[in-house]
Image 1 (cartoon, helix red, strand yellow):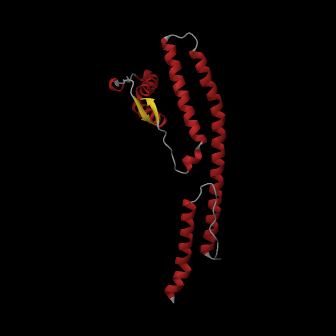
Image 2 (cartoon, one colour):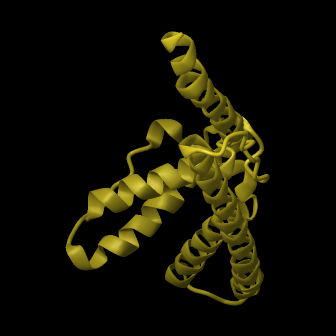
Image 3 (cartoon, one colour):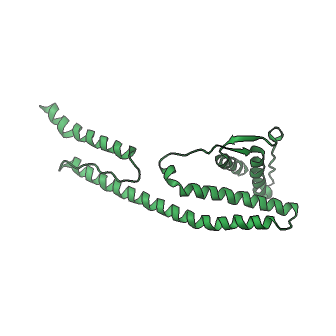
Length: 193
């Protein structure tokens, strides 16, 4: 008697809520699934509160996604303009130092544009799926770009940034240059601090 009553009144509702929570967690993050309210007691009220929380959470997530997409678009458009004008500037007569500055600005703008493009594809990030790109790229060129940017940041700090990559000269590798660029930038920035 008592075990059956406890099982019916406590464990069965907890099992139902646990099962529904697993469905919510593993389900489509874009939809607000609801746990059925089958009782008019503490468990029923808890289920109603949980449903209200999940509805609000999904609404806030959708608002955040719309905001990020809109802001990313608003930033991406002028960034494409900056990159276009840098290409025009590159065609003018520049000395070596100016050309190096244009190259650094262009590399930084393209890196920022890649990050912005990733934000536009935020649904993949929200779902926990980060696809890695696999393309051929010149590792030495990427290293030289990142070190040149780090040198600009260290100028006023009296820190010398040196790239010793003779063995990698002209080496083409396959991988994700965007992720590698992000990692290198973080490592270089943190080491300069």
